[in-house]
Length: 437
Image 1 (spheres, rainbow, N blue to C red):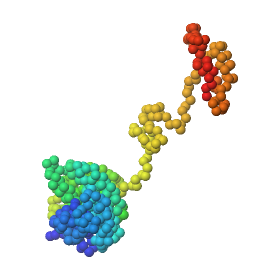
Image 2 (image 1 turned 135 degrees about the horizontal axis):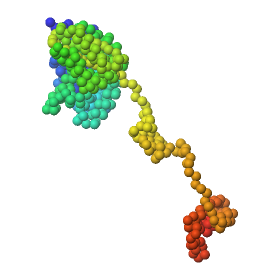
Image 3 (image 1 turned 90 degrees about the vertical axis):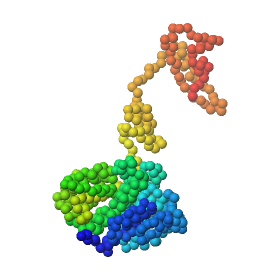
Image 4 (image 1 turned 60 degrees about the vertical axis):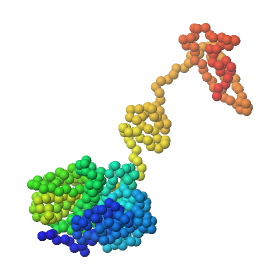
């Protein structure tokens, strides 16, 4: 006997696939019948690819701009295409309570158009949940940069964003997995996440989760979420399931749980699901979460899962505002801090010696040089010349410096060097009567 499906009149779902990746996920969802009662809309700038989509509602974005030939990886073209059809997109999202945006970030259409569609859907009154993938490392720096920028825009436009990094699949797949199968697994993750949200709201359970719970959980938070789902069986399926969740790369090996401020947990099983299993899962999972995290738990009864337990976690972390200026490092930091052009680098152990800040006075030296000793002859010569003055070429007075000559010290008993009646041991400025300024 099939479980009762909640009427689509009470919860109006619309899954919107944006770009090539989103369109492929829609095809999998529609072909599998995983979300009965949900509506599907496919949006793409590539008209040829869109013609292969199974969705009944299809729209070629920005046809006057792209002529249905795609964006060529240009994020700006994807954004402009969506903005061109803003009126049509509002109509697509009108009357829908929950819009699930599905896209792959890194390309032109999904990255550029998804934030625009999310904003228009929210303006139409819908709760907007975006589920996106980010590129593999081998896809290059440009696609990775586009994905990062697109994610920032999407996070500010949607109520919540679930990110599924494709690179995390590398630790789950065998090295002999083909490229086609690898990308297929990435699309399958998007499908599981979208159908998991639908199952939470539309399947009956011991602890039902309604739309109001999800709305309170997500509405207006502009948060980034991590998603993971596993399926286990056996006598210790509850403990085994929690262990697999904590080790999941999509939860950053448990770090996403410890950092989350809100956690949505769904348990799906057949009629054999016991209350003790629910209690065991909640207690074991809470050990890896912050004590201040808010919990929402729902259970789903699905006869096709008899003997199995399916656990789904959405861990949401609301990012704080990014600081506008970098916080200066402590002077004792191990790193070299380069601030403004007038700042002074500080290095441990040598910063105060080599790089002296001119704004800070140096401590007085403890060494005082002794006064020079002059012979009577040199002393008389210096005193006699102090009264002499010289004038500049322009007739200006030039002050004289009264300089004292250091004695001959250890050479005092040696014979003086005299040439042409001039004592060469005597400084030149004294011999020639030069005034020093």
